[in-house]
Image (cartoon, rainbow, N blue to C red; front, side):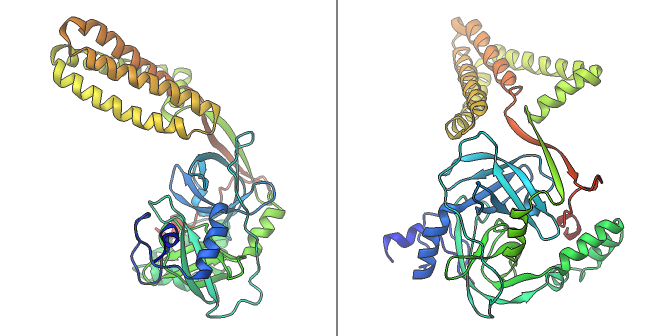
Amino acid sequence: MGAGDRNIPVLKSGQDLIVPHEVQPRPDDIARKLYEAAQPAMVQVKTDTGSGSGFFAGRNGEIIASAHTVIGSREQHIVGADGRQYKAEIKAIDDVNDIAILKIKDGSPRPDHKTLELGTTTGLTQDQKTYTFGYPNPYRSAYVSPGYIRHLTTPQSAVFRAQADGGQRLIDNIAASSVEEQTDMLNFLKRPVVQSRSNLRSGFAGGPVLSEDGKVIGVTSLVDVSSEQGYATPPEYAGLLLANGKAKFNFKYETTAAPWAEQYKSDWRHNQIAAVGYTALGAAGAAGSCAFVRYAPKLGGVGITVASLSMLGGDGSAFLDSTDSADKWKHGLASLADTSTAGGALLSMVPRARPYGLALMAAGATGRVATEFIQNRWTLVETTRTDGTDRPPLDPTKYLR
């Protein structure tokens, strides 16, 4: 096996997932060529509710992903081929056909990337070779899974077969929903998909299925791990959504602070009793920590030092990986506050310097809390249909649970 083979994570049929950077199954020449061409166009889609895959396809930096990965989430990020994380936003969703169009937040720097060309399902044949790309959870490397086409079908039979009760709960869930939701879910189950035999894992949703000539012939939608079946939305639907992005929904974003900080500010405006109670609890906790260090200096000092250094590791890493000025400020100041807290905790273990250590620790902890109020999150606050109704996008996962 050549050295280059180890740099191409391959997930072949019947084989377990192999940790990146270890020896991988040997890719064939086509898989190697496609991986080198497609990997710079791939992204990992990360939200506050889960993760999936995606790829650059539009001329203006549009990213194609699966709709169910981002539906219900308030924050979306993409991790580019350079390994850095970028804030993203939803530009369009076709919830019935499970396609979403994302873009990196306006004004933010963009990674160097390539784009993949959308093909067509016309002319696809049974047993035709496919190469499916995606980010299997929890890894940050894009894998390629060689396989072949079974046929064009609908996901209905596969979804019902995957249910332990034969789909009875699914039927009951659909029956209990509104007429509009029933229609959308039935259309989701009866839509055309490309069924392929590939070794896929959770996290592949939204990744491209490529033909041997490198064109996208499907966007992974559903994964049946037990039978190594993948179901992909035809690329024609992705092309239509790229061309007519605002057909069904509008999305409103705002810059916000940490969720608890936003809630705290809201409580001061609308529920002062709760806000005063939270403030009192926070002050009591801070006083208790200082008292713990004061009367048990070694145990308390070590504990707070370890906790602060752990936070410093996360904040420092986020600072280095930040691609946004607000992120730089937030995580940079948080790192300084963590350092102050850790230094104060260590200093408090020296009897003569204990008062100064406690003061430094308190200042660091207060500063760390204050950084949570810096508005650096790009948050989806409202989704509306263009027809004026307030019904949210179809979330098929709530019916499939």
